[in-house]
Image (cartoon, rainbow, N blue to C red; front, side):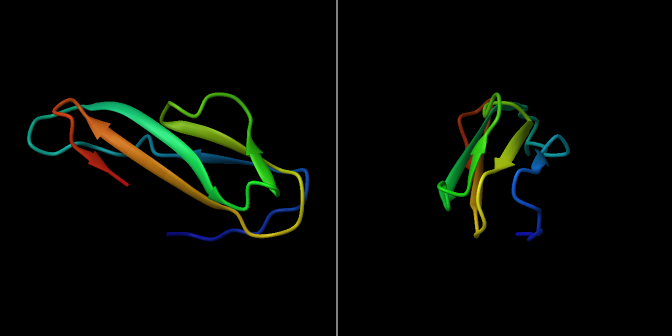
Length: 77
């Protein structure tokens, strides 16, 4: 878990491109979601790739969750 402070109106690029799957599997999908603080930020563009862009719209805390699923159907948050 990491934490950053950004100004209202700024965007943050989230990057999971260094993720890998175990046991010879490959990454099949990514799913980014805002789990709290959705009134302070929203995604701009796709939430189903290795990167996602979060745009702030207010002052407060936002929690983002990434679920990665591999080619064998195993998921990790």
